[in-house]
Length: 329
Ligand code: SF4
Image 1 (cartoon, rainbow, N blue to C red):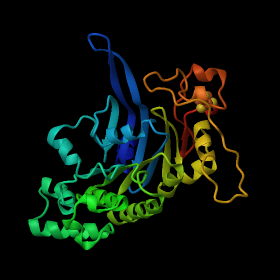
Image 2 (image 1 turned 90 degrees about the vertical axis):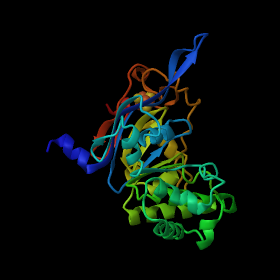
Image 3 (image 1 turned 30 degrees about the vertical axis):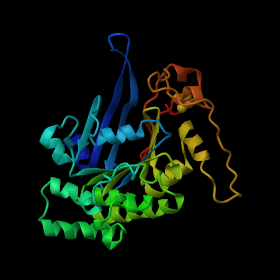
Image 4 (image 1 turned 135 degrees about the horizontal axis):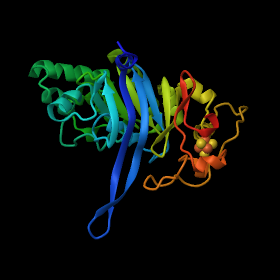
């Protein structure tokens, strides 16, 4: 077995130089005049059973990356391997089969559930679509699933509007679990919920991950939420992955100036711990017209003359820590 084949079988998912661009059209003939570079050349891998947290400000491309990885969106360039198999260009029945193994939990539990369907039908829909189980066994299976995610017994016969935001997200999680997927991509699963219920949903996801032997790609803008959930973390800025590391390491020893700024903004529970907050100047540039060189250079507190000319790439600083910054090249 070659090293490449070995790497592919060890990882559930591998993403190589993935790009997702959206064409920008203009003029009388609506010709293509440019691209919005939502995801611009990211590479990452997910080990079986781990939670990989993808973090960054709104508009950094993390949700687009998640949806492209699950093949809800078609990649512009790059490769995606799932269990060693190239899924980048799957179509038709092959793509449909893949959906059994990769499911999504969406941010907005209000918008992602059909208001006209009973909860039982919503959760059993994927099972029916894939012809799993008989009518009776299916109903029992769905009821067990609803109980497992912490919903009341009569939830099966109710409609989404009869539930709170946290309960609706539990319905979304039950639906994602119905087909017993191997990978769940959770896109900001708690950011639309009250703080008081966020930790309940996060803990539920953790329990289910262990119970169902799941691998999780957890996407969020809140670093403290990501820390609670993740084994490893990737930080995105303007469509680029700027740092990838073990979760503890990235909080103790962040290398990229953007990660350092994000971490400095996390409130400290201990008031004696007075680390200085790094305030970034300016706004995130448009992904239609990203800066030349390092995408972070117009806002970087440690910018150097070469940063506006040369684009850095992810380089290892140690075995489990990669950073994309010229300070480390
Ligand atoms: Fe800052 Fe330069 Fe590093 Fe970019 S490459 S993060 S601008 S120091």
